[in-house]
Length: 116
Image (cartoon, rainbow, N blue to C red):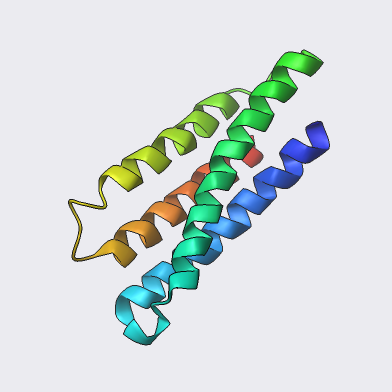
């Protein structure tokens, strides 16, 4: 379970970095705006939820102690997905900017949690 949690953490980081870069580029270059990019955003954000679930299962089944603040960063990432989604209607004219910055934020939280 530990290996899955570690691997999923790095997948979370790479996925959110990739979709964050795509969304910011699509904000500036309209030709990059494709439905496939939004599918990738959804996948990257579902990975955040999966990572939290795997982490909780790992901690409870293996009776391990998480590193200091590790859980805080994990649950902050999980909550951030909801906050980013909630802002989509507020920033209706700039969805690529919202999801680009939000995905990079998720990447940063993942990096911080992974390096504790």
